[in-house]
Each structure stands twice: as structure tokens, then as C-alpha cells.
Length: 188
Image (cartoon, rainbow, N blue to C red):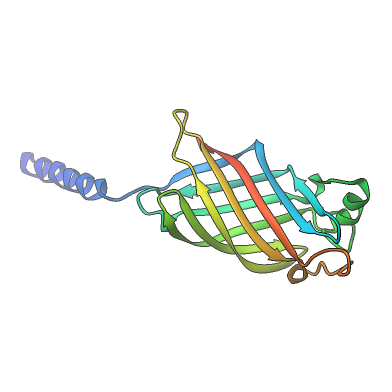
């Protein structure tokens, strides 16, 4: 009996030691009060701008093996605001985000590559108006603060035509600059 207890204890210690070198991803959620998506596009004499304030998401971050990290983001299109009332009305309409029919946009990561200790490339799929296309986000991720929170910033460029937003081609540029800013909070 004593021998089997020792064997069990030794097996437990070996399992603990074997697992000690393996990293564990840390789960995070987006602080919805400190998350937004901003976008901009060119126009003949100005730059159009807008933002979404209804941004939620989850992330699994493995600092020891960042390529194992994942993220999913949901954007409430009904929270769209723009720099003019006319632009906001058009952007909410059927020719652009069609917020009544498509109240959410989504991003789901597929892979992560390291650019530097705090900068990464995250590839994933973006769904807008029922159309899913691959995109690449340039990620800047800060180390955890004393309270465990992390600052997250992602940028990318998309072609609006890829998501069936082709109206006003003579007034609105094809390329849209996107920036996601969020505070990530440890999931409890």
C-alpha cells in the first residue's frame, strides 16, 4: 500500500513537472466601455470618418507561444456614428452597412505571427453584411498592467467592394482604414 502511494505521488510530481514547461493561454474579455472600432475613407476634398462603440470580444493570449493565441470580436453595427449626419445616414443604409438587416460584424482569428516582442500579424476572417473575407490585422499588444488588464490595438485596410459596399464609387474611395482599440480584462 505504501509503495503504491509513493508511486502515485511520484507520478503526480512527474506530471506537474512535465506541465510546468508548457504555457497556458490566459483568457481575456474586451472591456466594452473601453473598446471601439474607428474607420476612415477618402473623399475628393476630405476624409470620411466613422466609428462603432458596441465592440465586444474574447481573446486567449499565450505570451510564451503567441502563435497559439486567438481572438474573436463582435461589432454592433447599430452603434455606428459618422462625422456628418448625411454620411451616418448613408453608412447605416442598405448600400453600406445595412444595420437593420445586419446588426453585427464579426472577426475570428485563424493564425498569429510574431513581428517583434509586442507586435503581431493576426490573420482571420471578417464577416460584414453576410460576406466573409480573409483579412490581416497588425496587432500591438501591451504586457499586462498591475491589475492584469492589457491594451490592444489593431489596424488593417480593406477594400469596401469586397463586402458589397460599392455605392458612390465616384465620391468614396475603395480603401477603408480600420483601427480597433480595446482594453482586455482577465476573464474570471
